[in-house]
Length: 248
Image (cartoon, rainbow, N blue to C red; front, side):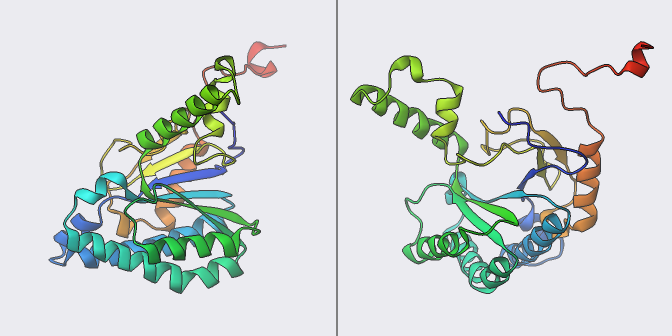
């Protein structure tokens, strides 16, 4: 675990972007229209987080459970991802944003994998901000795969059983090298984590919004950061008592 947040701004914010379909339904629009508006919200929040000094932004864009959605909707989501990368990659690169992708590659169309790989390759030296796209991602699968890697290393003699600890497992997660999220935001009024960053979220602060993701903007981001700044993060310990409080 890394205590990554400092001051008023979290170093790493992760967002569960929820509610595109319900946003569209309220307006008599198709779910595709909701997802399209959700992409616009991604653009706004990526810029807003960068402007506020957030070093890492992780977006839950497609979960391993989303494959259960109608085939047409999945195709629409993939088309929007293609459009986002092709339209926004140049701007992100120009703004010195590094792109990382976590998730499973199985089942993902080859052209999308190629686009994601190119985005990561092109921006790998950028340093202003890291945008982590959780695509076809599921935290339980990630943890199980990390455990399998460690087991294989132990069987081969590369490591001993005594070498397997929290640090070893964390080093075999897909998020290796990325600080744990300080703040996790979820929109749409739902208050659950939905198989997102289960290991990494152990000491994260959570802020939930009633608004759907397409309506989430800079004002909501500022509200979440303000609430985060007013919380006291103890990481299992106790809050330090100042000399003023003790009278010394």
